[in-house]
Length: 222
Image (cartoon, rainbow, N blue to C red; front, side, top):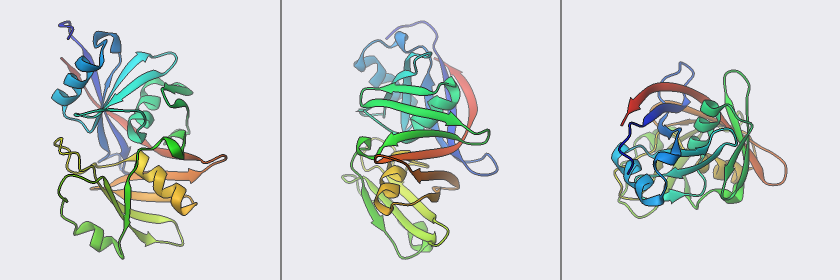
């Protein structure tokens, strides 16, 4: 690992209406300081966020995503956060190009449903049942959800990655929201975790728009 100082922007992605909550994301703007998978994986584990982004080309939006234990080909909240921070219209991933836009309050990405990793989408009868769930044992990636107001497309959700890497519950997860939107075939307004908000809308050709608020929490130096 390069011993020179590295600036890491810590974002909160999918914040609530008051700008609170959201899922923490680490963004290494100069990914060249961590040129190989091993050094990136080590830093992602040290930081301990559910995901960390390494930017290889900020102008092209080329980047890679790591959890504390593995590299991900696609993930929602890192891409929404990176699109907001880099202010680009396209993010380049190994799976394909992700289009991004902002509307002032929300940052949006457009992604193909098939890019999302498999998740178990488990429906419950009420938001209260979802709120009462205990963290399950590792082994299965579970997205627990229920309708809050089906007519309005309002959903209550919690996410349990089940990887055994120290992230017992994800505060806000774009990929799981994408899969749920694809399954239900309609726009959703999702309240996840302690109070995060994710907006989704089906698009053309099996694409899904995912949007949320992003804010900079701090910049740390390593």
